[in-house]
Image (tube, rainbow, N blue to C red; front, top):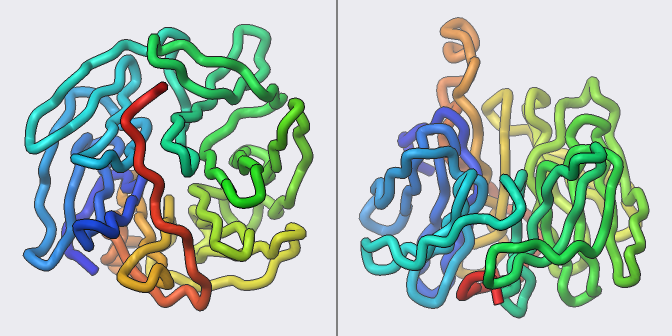
Length: 269
């Protein structure tokens, strides 16, 4: 899709109103916009980018120690986190911001971020969480645990259940997207592919990609039936780059499934 590459690409978000894709180099760290005029870097930050979401007028950007709104080329409303560094975050269809953090006990807490930067805990999980994605029509949140290769399904009342898992030899799960049928998509970093699980957690489809380490994905384009996939160039040897020169770029592929439009947020409520 674009020759612009990142050390560690991630957080792709398709803007239906602008008909463009936003994505980040998490380690660069920078934010890019890809539209009809090509790819442009629109923001550079001093610290790694932990999350990126769309707002009605721009972007919600999460860093290690703070978050802010990026509107018309200006950074606004810088706010420090009140609970430490989030490992990942996402928005639900109502624009509420959700995040995962590590607790002192070694457990991981997932909950809603409040306006004062604190986290209201809803679920606890016994392993590291690397990605979150809401399935708002079915009122459930998916959480990805890369170390065990598991995806958890979180529901009201503190319910946590293992939705599916992949053997470690297949690659490390990275990134999450949910289509309108409730199927879950994720990338296999180190596995040269992206996979789709049906609404019951069964492996339904595997798509090969021309890079070893796809990192994240989202649905987009005019009909919402295209998958945009970010990737990593970090730690890829020169020899490996000869076989996978697109490492670090953003790719697109027909999904055969339709995803819901990306939610808009105004920041923590």
